[in-house]
Every structure is written in structure tokens, then in C-alpha cells.
Image 1 (cartoon, rainbow, N blue to C red):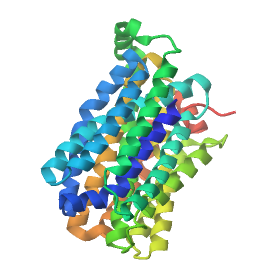
Image 2: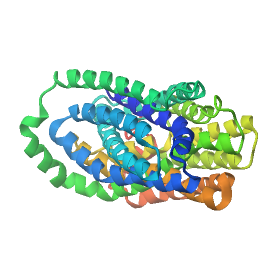
Image 3: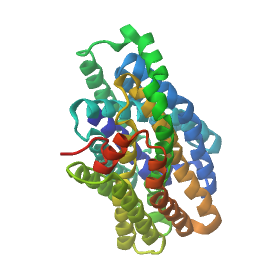
Image 4: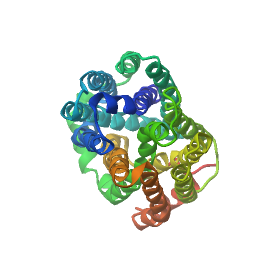
Length: 398
């Protein structure tokens, strides 16, 4: 079930990444105005994410079906109504609320399954997310090049979300209904001493996740624009930017989930450093092959960041509080996911897209320097440190 949700979520963002140049032109926006409009995704997402965490703890993962369906509807609405800056801002606020809620619910589901079976489900689920981004980016680029309406790929997302939601509801009915004791679950989730003891770690992990997500979504949302405006790629090729980035992310996440021995602090530091190097290459070239190579390197480094910090932060959180804990980390991390494209937009307005990419590289470099010292400073116990030093999925490996 977590994999289907992540696939739909990834497909949505793949469509979005490849559609940004078309939607920008349809609304008649400058890069700076586009950056401002993207802030409204955050305005919608931030209040929705804590509510989604509470809803999962109270009613179970059927909530995921509702959030995925609403995301499909919001995507169609944005594509149809984005004709000027105010309309785009309103549409992106609604889209942000749906996306933020979906992000929490699918991560909570993956965390529950990972805790139950001891396998790196979070990392693999994020791999499915990225694989779906690849397919959706390429298909959207082809549809846009064919001159089809910008809403067409979002209609396909709506159909996929409906199918995944039906499967989620059917699967959840086979389990005990958590809603029968919803009040008790909610009180437990927010009053359990274990969760309060983990709160500093959850907050720091969310902050580190925000840096990683800022880099990831900066590339995912702006790589098509970068290829169009700086590299001068044709309409059928601009979708190659988010596609190559997402493919490298996906392959890296599947590969890292199969590795049996590794140290999380090395994964975090090396990943951020590789991402900084790849982003710098993107900023310093106007060649399509080199730009795609830089995107691939940035993706390899970025791929491991959020799954690693989320797995570490929630490894020992009780299931009754998993939605709440996931919402703490995801809400803070999502700030970075939403701020990354805005950050690029305003840097692009001031210094051009190459300068904006260098600014993104600086974020990755900062993460490389801060990750392990920050996590150790708030480690809840020596046992957690042993877990962190053993692996990146939140559990020791044999």
C-alpha cells in the first residue's frame, strides 16, 4: 500500500515539474512572480500537515485515500484556472493543502510498515516516488510538445489516484478499525513521554530534511525551466531535466535500500557533498549533456537525505504516535520542499538561473557540514547513536 501512494504522489510532482514552463507562460508570469506564487503552496500545506498526522493516528490509513484523491482534483483545477497571478496563487494554496496532507499520510504508512517488518520501506517507497516522477515527466513533456492541453496529464493523475485510493480503502477494511478507539489513540499520540523525549530529534531531523528537500525540489521544479532558458533545449527535451533527476534519485534509493551495512552519518554527509558538486556543475555549464550529468550527480546525493533522517528520527516512536511524529518531521522538511523553488525564483530574478543554481549548491554544502553534528547533539540515547551509526533506515543491520 505505501508504494502505490508514493507512486501517485511522485507522478503528480513529475507532471508538475515538466508543466512549470507551460503554466508560467499560460499565466504570463516572470520568474520572480512564479517564485512568489509558489509560496502559496506552503501557505496551503503547512496547516494541513499537522491535521493529516492527527487524522492518521485517529482513523488509520484510509485517510491516505482521501488525500491522494484531493491532490488529483487540485492538479486539474490549477491547470485549468491558472490564467494570471491571483488565480495561480489561489490554486496553488489548495494544491499545497492536498499535497502536504498526502505527504504526511503516505510517509506515516511507510513508517508503520517499516517498523512492523524491519525492512527499509521508507527508502524504497521514496524510490517508487522518484520512479513515478521519471515516467510522468517524460509523458508530460511529450504531451506538451504535441500541443495537448496542460490539464491532460493531471487528468491521468486523477485516474491513477482514484485507483490507488480504492486499493487503499479495500486493504484498510481488512484490518481492525482504529477509529473505534480514536480518542484514546489521539491522547496517547500527543501525551506519551516517549514522543516528548524524541521531540528535539524530530525538530532537528525536520530542519535537516528541509535543507535536503529544498535542494531536491529546486531541481525538480526548475530543471525544465533551466534547460529551456539557459541550455535552450527544445520543448520535447525540457522534460528530460526532471526525468533524469528523478531517475537518478530512484535508482539511488533502490540501491541504498539493498545495502546491508552502512553508517548513516557518512550517508548524510557524502550525499549532501555530492549534491553540492552536481548542482555546481549545472550552474557552470550551458551544455545539455553536462547539465544532465550535473542533475544526475545532484540527484544521487540528494536521494538519500530525507529517507535517512526520517528513518532515524522515527525509528523508536510507538505506532500510536507515528502519524504525529511523522507530521513533525515532514512539516518542517516540507518547508524546504516548498521554499526550494521559491528560493531559486528570487535568486534567478536577482542573478540569473546559473547564479540561482550556485545558491542551491550552497544549501547542499551547508547540509554536509551540519548533518551529523546536529543529530548527535540531540540524540535521545546511546542506543539511538548505535542505530544511527549502524544504518540509514532507522534500525541496525545484521
